[in-house]
Length: 135
Image 1: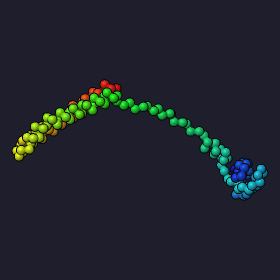
Image 2 (image 1 turned 135 degrees about the vertical axis):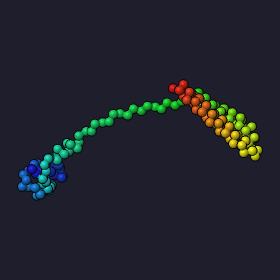
Image 3 (image 1 turned 30 degrees about the vertical axis):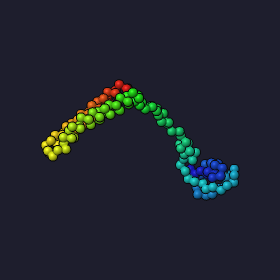
Image 4 (image 1 turned 90 degrees about the vertical axis):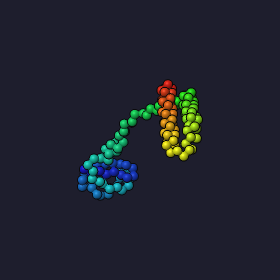
């Protein structure tokens, strides 16, 4: 099976296989075009290409939920108070560690690290409690 498809006006006509490769004039616009060998008509190809694709489901936008102002203030005050308490309680140990006694310096370091870790754990617990209440 062969088809004549005009490049000028789009006229299409099925012809016999004996015209394959020859040029022919379009009966409508008189422009010359080549007759091609095809299995399916080009209009069938166009129909396949123009088939609409299914649309994806719509995206639902959920606004982010921030913490209320009171919860933020409580968390900031917790961190500040714990920092001040740890620094004030560490002053005697820091002044005592200025001596040359190595054993005393390592004990002071252990106490400071313990207080810092304890303060951090307390602050994180308060933070989790406030965030749970704020929900």
